[in-house]
Image (cartoon, rainbow, N blue to C red; front, side):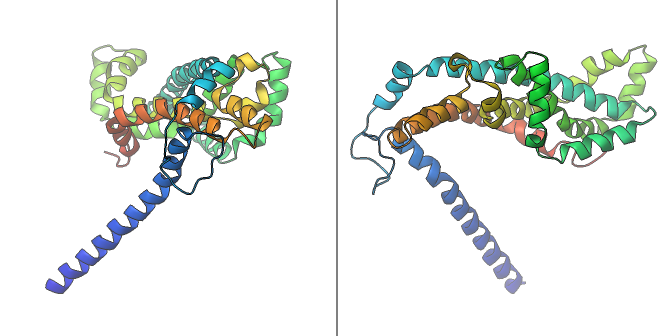
Length: 278
């Protein structure tokens, strides 16, 4: 018994040690970027992590020299509407596949699963041509439509969660004369708050940090998102704007970090929801 307890303590100690090392490896680069954003000058490299003096000049330069506020507003706009439409599409799709039985249901689910396995950039040329035909290039609507449609692959999370809701609740509502829409709004949605928060948060963050597709679609400086704007900023003066770029990265990370901190309880519940089918 003592040898087993000793073995468990050793394993637990190594586990905590490994988690500590992983945490340091993840936090150190982020901390370096934060400290660099307050470091005077333009050089990102320094022998010390914490600078001798701190300055807010880089943050002021972002708003004075570049349309950073406009980029931020554009990104919030795209992310917000992407979150709204993605959540609606995903929850409705998950409810349909969970509670309806129709011909071709399994084939459609399998097809969506196979499509979701391919990287998104493989369809960029086709999407670009489609947006060109629809005259949506260089518009925020193009980003919102594509992001929202791409988020539909998350219906599996919602379907798995809806599958855990007892069918007796649905049957009782049907006996009382409730329609499918009433069941969805009055029963399914109130019971799936953690899942809704998880879908909304992931949809918002994916639209907030995306670069590849936004860089392909947007060209007007006043319509750029943060990721594209910061890239073009350092692309012009790559050797002299490191600390300015670090300041921009910090400002980009603030909204996402706050959302994850305040909604982490719902996020964890949403990640584990539907893991066990009742």
